Amino acid sequence: MTQRDEFYRLHNGDAAVLPFSDQEYEARIKGLREIMEMMSLDAVVLTSMHSIAYYSGFLYCAFGRPYALVVTYKEVVTISAGIDAGQPWRRCYGDNITYTDWQRDNYWRAVRSIIGEVAMLGIEGDHLTLLQNDKLVAFLKPASTLDVAPAMMRQRMHKSPAEIALIREGARVADIGGYAIKEAVAAGVREIDVTMAGRDAMELEIARAFPDAEYRDTWVWFQSGLNTDGAHNPVTGRVLQRGDILSLNCFPMISGYYTALERTMFVEDVDAASLEIWQANVAAHELGISLIKPGVSCAEITAGVNELFEERDLLKYRSFGYGHSFGVLSHYYGREAGLELREDIDTVLEPGMVISMEPMLTIPEGQAGAGGYREHDILVVGEDGAENITHYPYGPDFNVVG
Image (cartoon, rainbow, N blue to C red; front, side, top):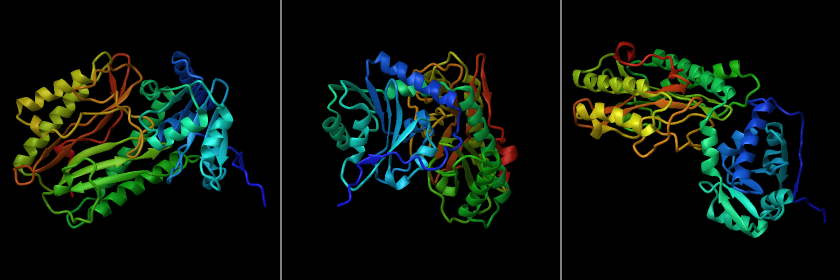
């Protein structure tokens, strides 16, 4: 019988151009090793898409299979499934080991081949499942495991100049999608038709500006009428009508980094009740932007916007927090929960952080001005203030269209 490997190195072809330089990844790994030293860890096994992508550049497609980045004080190794062949190695910083599936748990045998049985092991407590944690204990037998996710999140909150440059490009591409959507809006057109126009425009621009990248997951949520009540409602085939409230949401994805542009729009005309609510949300948006600066806490910014809505008897219609961090982020992975504009987040803004301002009001069906109103800009916090890198205009003067 042919002897089959439990794992092996499939370094197939030439390494690809990664989203960032080796020096950028080395700086990130150095920061992780400082966390390891502070927590007295011998090694870390990272399992989430965002952490693996942040430290190695490789963004995996799980499809029910586990992946990892194993970091010691000497090694950086991604662990990937055989179905991906050489792509993970070509797209990662550091070494790569491929595990086979002819025998259950070859994944954990591959991890063990790097670190053996260590005393103190770092894990991602917000991602590792109970099933996989049991296997980790069985195969690696650590004396103790510690959750490194909060410390890594704090590291990711502070963006490098290279990250900020990529995020800035994402905001520029989102603006392009916004203009394409504006041109596509008309009474009688379906949501899905408008959506495809915005998505195609962004993907073409990403391919032009980033010829060495992988292209995946750029998307648009374009909603109309009742479908605007939620920020993440899927696109439908609903046909736009004169007077409809619209929600434009562009999300370009560049090498694991998503950015966003979100705007309220109306088809051809906006009624008086809707206009009043829209203007109130724009006022909250502008106030929130003015409050984003170094030295101010997320809770303080939230309180300021809350006060404006309270004065106008609209706070009860607020849907969610007023903004969040940007970086290695998507609709199905990643989140820097410690940098969100909510009442219960006391993080103080610092230079190098990137955060959105995105107030939303949802007026229930049957009431005057029914629908969801949302504006969204991305700001880079600097030494003295914050730079708004979103340039597509907001408000009634520009966004009554069709």
